[in-house]
Image (cartoon, rainbow, N blue to C red):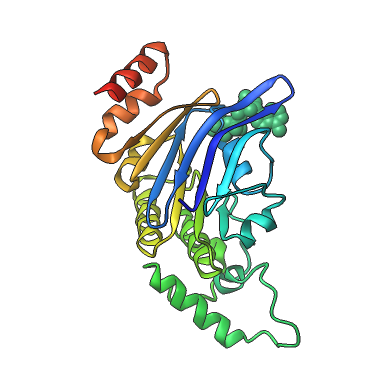
Length: 251
Ligand SMILES: Nc1ncnc2c1ncn2[C@@H]1O[C@H](COP(=O)(O)OP(=O)(O)OP(=O)(O)O)[C@@H](O)[C@H]1O
């Protein structure tokens, strides 16, 4: 496992946002984390990306227990998070957004021609055919922008890609575009953590599924062990569905 949690917990005042959640992701696989509003998905992402620190349990990177002190710390260990707002400037070109935040090495002039070429090649390698990398990123579709953000993280050396609801604001076709890029990132050997509340988006691309409910892990399922319909049923919540989760685990 590249990134792993063992029974981590996080409290905000009187709210126990996460309780004893265990999960792990290895290179070349997609772990989907599913949960309804308030389930603890954002809290988990923030701990995995160094924004928050966990109160209890353990966080491991490459099998070693760590405390991620900041997003920079996470990034330095190859853990990149793509948030829903994508941290892009809409009026800036695709290639400039691609390199946003990356500092040119000291003393070296920024080579514009090279940067444009690298952006185009990296996007193409992810299956994104954006012929004109000079167009403002804001003119791309939502799915294409998500894909640019994923390609950017891959280019800058991410080993673990954490995607915060990358398909939630998209229609079926655009969501399909993003799911394809997630599969490509996995095929390039990245460990992907795909956060979503949509089982129909998770199921086609996920290798394993972790369900969160009110801060607690409700079980983890391999794709072979659960259908999209069963995932949907589990996600709908309610005590009787928790029972179904137990039943499915026993089978
Ligand atoms: N900074 C905070 N201060 C206080 N409570 C918080 C904080 N962040 C999260 N919580 C609480 O922790 C619980 C889990 O929230 P979290 O945002 O992790 O859930 P989520 O699954 O991401 O939900 P959503 O899908 O609505 O974003 C909620 O009850 C939330 O109100």
